[in-house]
Length: 180
Image 1 (cartoon, one colour):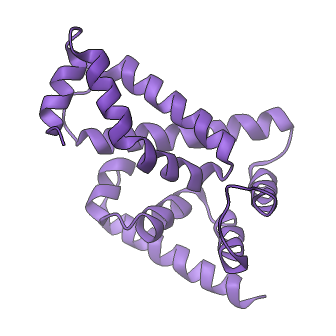
Image 2: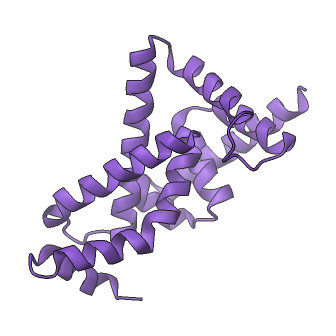
């Protein structure tokens, strides 16, 4: 695999940009897809948001200063694109954020791309009840097994705040799952 610094240099160089972007997409598309999918829940929506994410990365690569890892920067873009997408979708549908989340979870049952069982579905229902930040922290830590330091870089918040958010999310999920 190509070193991140080399990849960034090649992405910023007009002569090597196209090939470097292809490498970037092939390297990160699956991880970013699943990160986005866990936020927006729908396969087609996740594909759209993934495409928007890569367009933003391509258009803004010259503004990437290297203060964080390229991976963290792209995850931040993907996260913001996902949350913006959900807000726009609820606005277009004329419903609130929570109603949209509930509908998306309901739609998972009919989604041919959803491979979860009843327990996974119940967990998704519990996650839909969480505030966005707690849901993000939980999914990044639990599903993606990311380190708090990496999540901190992506969400631009302290490790302590993330640990607190994760702990609160776990408690709320436990309560939700026991209530059934």
